[in-house]
Image (cartoon, rainbow, N blue to C red):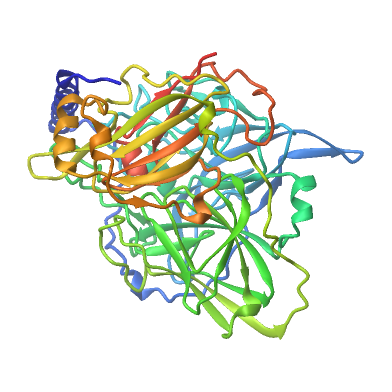
Length: 585
């Protein structure tokens, strides 16, 4: 860990002065033609008029005489028009698909099979200029000739080779004309040897993640293991097992995506803002859709694909959720809740029994403030998600949700070989507006400081010295949240950390003695994202190996370009709240 006040101050000065100079020179990229239509008042759009869409499904494996075999896919990124609402003009978006005509928002759901490789050639067919404004005063993927939209796909939750992980600097433009400094290869290989569960894929280009996802580059990916999953008896089949990808957007009256293009500190960052929030809630590509359901159990794999919005989901008629999985892994035991909080990039795998509804409809709602946890309260638009219309005829439902699910080993502290301190910082301008965020007080491009061993188990104490809740995502690794402890005399500790940037020298043990908040039962399993409370130290046990077997990785995890960990509020990770790490033997 860096611990020099000179290093911190120098990094701040270089970033701020460099950004200020670039802004004055006007060195930033904008879209080809900025939209000038007025911002749409989302309350003018009627809710629950569009049917919930099912995204196209693609098998990630072949079957030869009943024997599954590896399969190669080619999935492109296309610019096209998309209807988010019945009464909204078509929107220009960027979408994944096997062709431009078949591309959707979100993209196709890839269904992979445990232990069978899926190879994907991700192809960039995007135009030379972006539909949303760039800001090159932050560290950004930028073609030398300023032409083309850099993209790279990260399979979120994958335990896979670094060459196929979607490193932020492994970007490429259309036709692979220009490539980033960490570019590896055209075809990514996913081994699918990990535990069955829910993943999702999205763009991860350096400094452009927030705008590329806003434009639509997201999609779901399931790893199925029939031998383990079928005996559970969970709702199955296309009708009763549904993926819900939820995010927020604002629009102009012409249908185009609205993004405030003026930064909070325009003299430093012309376009960057600390969080993006949209007024309309989108589920599977439709604003506030409706779904007709039978009086029986349904399984919903819910992915929060928002840039910054947290959702605290609940049903307005009191229906509950039976949690069977979290992020990319099943829970050991089912957990019942009436509401739950889902941060950006988190996944909740839940069963809902509509036979228990006393009403003929149920609205899935949200009451999480934005920014979370101390921001504005929701309103009628962003407080509603979708509507379920429940048929009156009773069903003979043979589905069930067992108390015991798939059993994985719990966290074993005796196996820990390394303890680390990861500190979250936010820096402000003289006007009090955020300028950038750091992990451990250093920029993304600073030398690597985390070098876990392949197969190791570590404890990371994540210290959040900001006012925001940050969903921390670790590539490759799975982890369990052990405890959340409030800092006492936080200002005193923060002042020391801003000078020393060393938790041990600042006597973290003297300050991490406040209120302890229990990890929610539905989040006590293995995860790849966890919400870091502001003013708290969150202890997580990180495992750099499989949890479902004792097998070694079938790839070289020490190879270039390595992996990253970051806050999954996209506007934060785009502005330095991300760090590389490298595994060693």
